[in-house]
Image 1 (cartoon, helix red, strand yellow):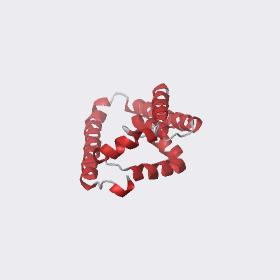
Image 2 (image 1 turned 90 degrees about the vertical axis):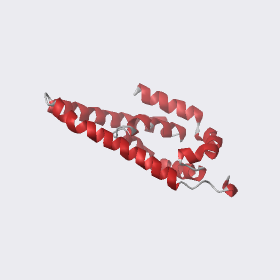
Image 3 (image 1 turned 60 degrees about the horizontal axis):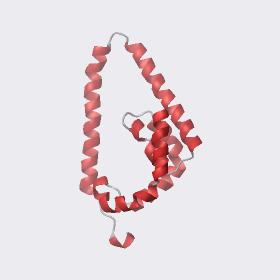
Image 4 (image 1 turned 135 degrees about the vertical axis):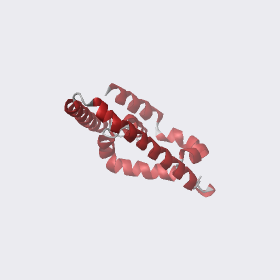
Length: 142
């Protein structure tokens, strides 16, 4: 939780508005436009609690979820409670899985390694697809 809090506070200090020039200039590679950021702010205001809580349960996402929460200025108390519950649930799942696996670690690793690689391939493919289909922000909206 210390790391989660540090990332949240750093992102909150930065603030999303400071990213506007960067997003406008490099949005193509980030595959995001400023109007999409504004929509995300609205969505996060409504569903941020669930995003943080469930994000803590998803590998890769769990490491990054503090950043949008801080950038979009989610209330610290809400962030901390949702993060704590999500982190506790993730830890409980890992502990239970470890207990159940016992001495069958090599069997589990036989499936977990390919599954992890498959997730990575899906993430890279999704980024490449988004990059290929990304529409830049019209000049009038800049």
